[in-house]
Image 1 (cartoon, one colour):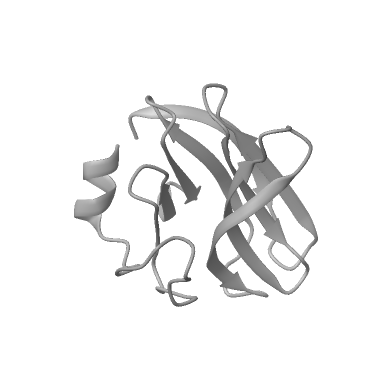
Image 2 (cartoon, one colour):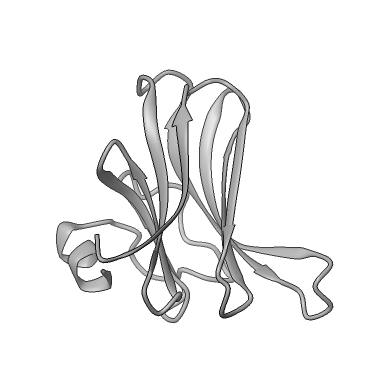
Length: 131
């Protein structure tokens, strides 16, 4: 990928994990969370006062033990407006903060009323177009 590797984690799915990354150039950020049962990737936005976060979108990454021990990476595009979640060298999810789109492999959950209103399908063409 052509971007900035901002976070890296040796991940054991099914163990509690929380990893966040924020753009140094705008109010956008991402959060990965494994609550012990499910892995989700969130697009977030800092509020104007800087004290809180608003969740813009959420993408399902895995259930429990669907994947084995993995290396998780959070990679930002060079313009700091797109962010990807990469597991073992393969992109599993992308947020595009300009287009207000969240894309993942299993297209779950359905688009919400705040953000992604179209398709969620993460394709190789989409990944190549974003990075």
